[in-house]
Length: 241
Image 1 (cartoon, rainbow, N blue to C red):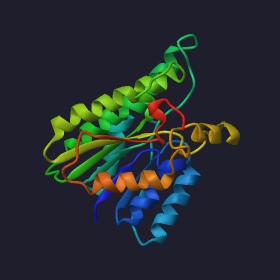
Image 2 (cartoon, helix red, strand yellow; image 1 turned 90 degrees about the horizontal axis):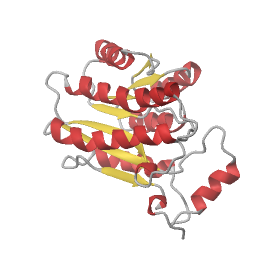
Image 3 (cartoon, rainbow, N blue to C red; image 1 turned 135 degrees about the vertical axis):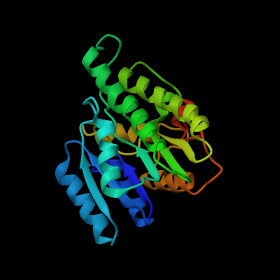
């Protein structure tokens, strides 16, 4: 049984992907920060499938947290074959409202921690046929100045995806999935979310099922590395249907 580490795996899309990978037969190392109850519930659902799920709490804004997280997972679960960098901070700021603390928190969770986790992942002994998938954002293709700190962090992680794919070959593949409007943000009005999805070239946005199919494709394609699949209904094209 292969083990998959999913950061931010207790809620929202992370939870959906954790359940999906468990259904494919993976043992799940489920990271969370503050969502302890949701993590326990997700783990219980995975265990009900007869599969292993262990939960690990770490605040990825803390110095050394990513390294400590991976070390704890290795000690408890052994080799990790799949790393899914999903945890992220997503808060609005612009150049006018930019502050040091918020900027650094976005970079720490969304960029630095994935980099440190990828390094620890690649340093495992005898690692072969392994896969890293970085969850990105379609905003990296058409960046604008809202959500400035967040967008810059995802642009950085997207660049790291292609850079490290070359460094980690041939035993580790590195790919990404850039998302559009999949699930409403916690504070987003449903009407605004629906309008975003309708105002895409395909007029439908994208679904969690699309994301899971992309996840399967990346995991099951041994010749695919350094690629980013964008799932957003064509929103990155910048036109409407």
